[in-house]
Length: 99
Image 1 (cartoon, rainbow, N blue to C red):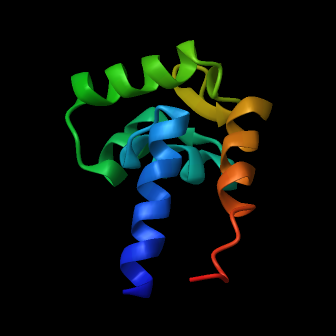
Image 2: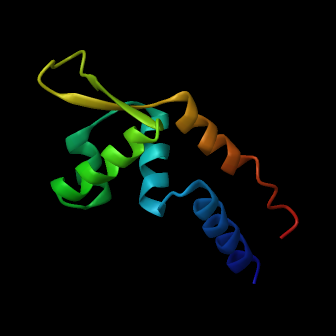
Image 3: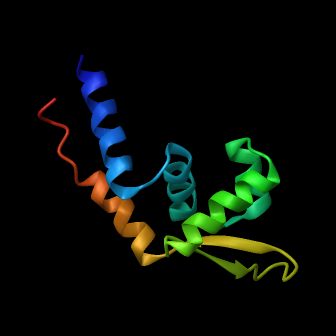
């Protein structure tokens, strides 16, 4: 019962932020460290076109940004923005101890 309530809280949070679970996973991944697009595609197990659409959506909402990779200027890295970090922090601030 407790886990179900936490899951429902997570679903509600995602709805209020207009995020999918995969969007949230991407934000969490790039919050740890910037990631190459090819690594994100590999980690979330979606095709290139789907990943591009997801990243475009997150970028248009100001949650991530694309930057040239410092090590290989032919590659693009994804970084989280302040707004993206705030979305993650909003979730982490939810008090689940009541469950």
